[in-house]
Length: 277
Ligand SMILES: NC(=O)c1ccc[n+]([C@@H]2O[C@H](COP(=O)([O-])OP(=O)(O)OC[C@H]3O[C@@H](n4cnc5c(N)ncnc54)[C@H](OP(=O)(O)O)[C@@H]3O)[C@@H](O)[C@H]2O)c1
Image 1: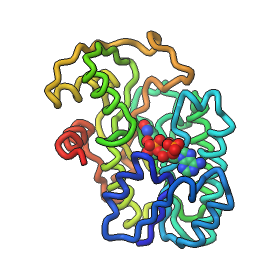
Image 2: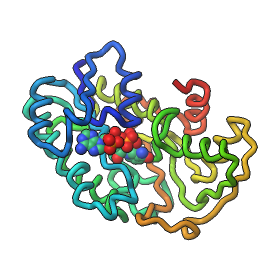
Image 3: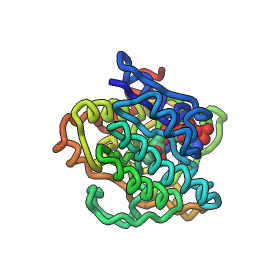
Image 4: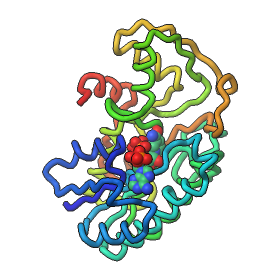
């Protein structure tokens, strides 16, 4: 398959690199496939002529989105419309990555794909607008994921381990529930989804659920690190953007669509720690 990946320097794109071995994979640098420029998108897609385009690029700094709404909207929504336009012209399939932050977090059971959305942050609103833009391509898959991390990249796992290595006492929020998801598991799932021709909207997170505090505990336990870790509440650490208190996503549509490869989040964590590269 000819696969074009946008957002080459990000953590999910790095996992794509490992996952699509043996395929024709194109990962242009951000300066070449710059999502803020419609002409750059049309020109690269026209040149590469991909069968599948995976959009791993996004304005992902959730707090900064609150003060940089225009830029966040350009990258997370408007540019996705340009990608959809370019894919449509090539008959390519567009895989758009979306987020659990499209929900407000007041739910009490895992969110299904058809549950009403109600983002409570600029980031969530722009990503939801991005879903609508992606759906303009006749062949599209919108995969909502959550709490992404892996051995590489800027993420919760690496932040926790670095902070603990500095001997710091850590307070981590224990009142937000979600599903930590590894980039490698998501990348593998998206590859199978592309091969099996999945279409529409699907939830793609690791299975099970925990809190950020529970996730931190599991990391330190698995690494055998003795860390001064204690729980705190979201209210103890106010941030510019509001996060959903509960954003577990139901994965049953995934199972109905085809091969479900998403592991339990704890098993996925152990896999990352066992095989970090
Ligand atoms: N991280 C999470 O917890 C999480 C949760 C749910 C959903 N998601 C979604 O999953 C996808 C992948 O996220 P990730 O964690 O891999 O994010 P990431 O590591 O922040 O990667 C995003 C990439 O997009 C690039 N980018 C930003 N503006 C761009 C532009 N104008 N043109 C081209 N590239 C641009 C960024 O480059 P710079 O670094 O140079 O800005 C970065 O390399 C995103 O759609 C994100 O919204 C992430």
